[in-house]
Length: 439
Image (cartoon, rainbow, N blue to C red; front, side, top):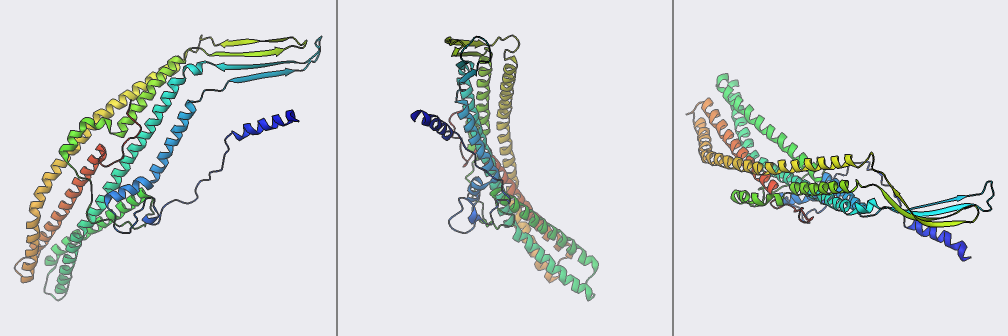
């Protein structure tokens, strides 16, 4: 009875240790949230969101980041697989007697293990671990880029909202003036020559306002997509961008340690370390296959033999020379990639710092010119009402104020964009690589 139970029990235990598959159907509709309160890590209280709150929402809900983070699970699975030695091989045969002088069926049983996989085990495992850490660093670099884009989009939207009132005020002023001139011309008290400058100025102001509204809508839709929101979802933002403090001198001083903090450079170093292990593994794998084992056999006359056996591959044609060449070329390519990226990092930051300094100088000039332009436009409106200034001069002064306002907002936005780009490249206020020191 016990003997009849043991085989089914052993088979049941074997099947219990096997993995089972469950269906994972594809989604049938886009998984976009209708509002911010449906997002992960949504603020507990309703109200306008600051730039850093938008960054936190982007890091938690960006669809591309969610997909990228699953690569880490794949890399962990590959590392786990690399740490598992190949199974030994069990062979056997049962040979019933068909003819001849024998009296019983013959049989044989053998167990063998390939030793070359043990020789390359450590290098293969170290390479898989380095590759896993490379994937983790790549994910952090993608998080940096997503956070930087969220900062830039939110800041550009806020700055656009700040510039809209002045542009809308100019349109209203010119539209009222144009309507009065239209009525005066209908009564014969004004000419088309008097109306032309106001019409041109009104058209330019309206075009600027409509262009701003179009740009704001496009930016909001981009930000919604970045956060995993529907295009029509409303995302209220604060009136002033709350960016991390920025010190150009400190940013320049941090260049010396930037290679140890930039996730893309750390990922390349892990990739190079994995390639180094790949070269070692390829060199170790040039040794021939060596299979050791043992077996026992019985012939048809009940003569039983047993003992060790070995199989050795003869490296006559394939000495793994192709894989060694591929591994060495891959290592050389990754070294060149790292060298090129390292050379570009410093130049990129220095270039943005120079642009920021130039824009700051231009901002100082425009800020000093803005009060005079505003005062001249205000005085021109009073003078036009009193009849002491021509229509052309009034329109020119109003257009000049609008141009200066637009120039100021453009330069402020450009300065903030350079600041955000520098903070993204240097990682200020962004996640760090937690995989350990790069090798």
